[in-house]
Image (tube, rainbow, N blue to C red; front, side, top):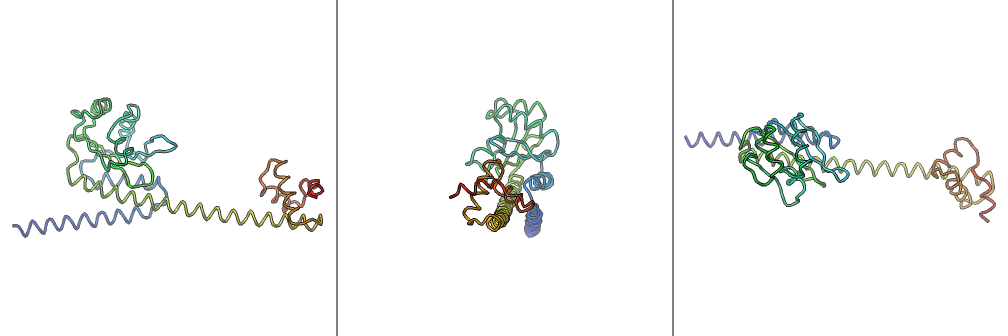
Length: 251
């Protein structure tokens, strides 16, 4: 009997390990934050028992916003939290010392005197909210219509999912930063190239130095209220010299 129980426990552990390995693999394929949010919400509904609804809270432009909701019930509950300025989801997301916040029964909870009764009246009894380990405040919010919907195993599963989700968000953010850096570098090289071409045209045509040619472009940029690159590109494309009077004033 004991041996059978151990085999059952090992089988469960293996099933959980394989399940979360799959989650990590799937999350690693997402290319942007919104895709990660949607994937995490879908996975929460599948992986964590007791979850009837799920959503994501994020901070954008200094405001808390709901993201990737599973259904309109989540939007209703999120609105109650945001209007009241209180709730387990806000606590989990905004307090850096909180890993997760669990409300077992909102009908008797005293921590949220406004949110609790209103959410309970809407049909919500249990909440499990987990701060994702991301570089900015993000929370995964799990909602159950029954009291005590999230036991110890459910909380453990949710914490593992949150950890994977946070890692995925960090990877996506790093990719976006690297892509932006690469794009900025390419734009910078392109700008230097077109400015150099424009300088060469002016130097040859007006018999001026590179410094004088750059000053012509710079003054044209200021007087025409155009970017320096746009002034240079216009000269390269059309051959029309911008504000050649600036040449004589350069000394």
